[in-house]
Length: 139
Image 1: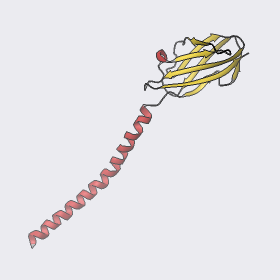
Image 2: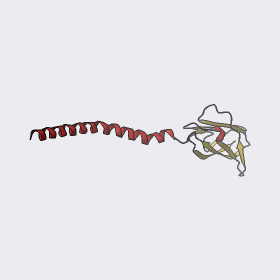
Image 3: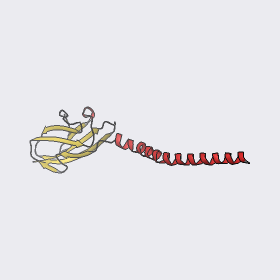
Image 4: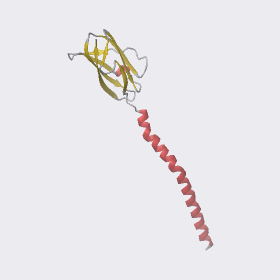
C-alpha cells in the first residue's frame, strides 16, 4: 500500500503545481490577447480630419485663400487630392503646397466672391483613403 500512497501524493503535488502555474499564466495570456486585439486599432488609424481652414460653412476674405487640413495621423501628400468645386459646379484641382507637417495638407488659391466646396481625399500611411467636403464662402 505504501507505494500507492506515495504515488497519490506525487500526483496531488503535481496537480497543485499545475494549478499554480495556470493561475500565473492566465493573466499573462489575457494581457497578451488584449495587446494583440488593440494593436490593429493603434497601428492602422485612418486619417480623420481634425480641423480645417477654412472651417466648414465659414466665410473668408479673398481673393487669396489658404487651405490647411489637419488630420489625426500622417498622410501621404503625393497621393492625396484637394479639389475646389465652384458655385456653378466646375471642379478645379488644387496643387498641394510643400508639406510642413506630415499630418497636414496645405494649398492656396485666388478666388472670386462666391460659394465653394473643398473636396479632399487623403491617403493615410496605413493605405486607407478617407474623403470629405468642406463648404465655404468667399467675401
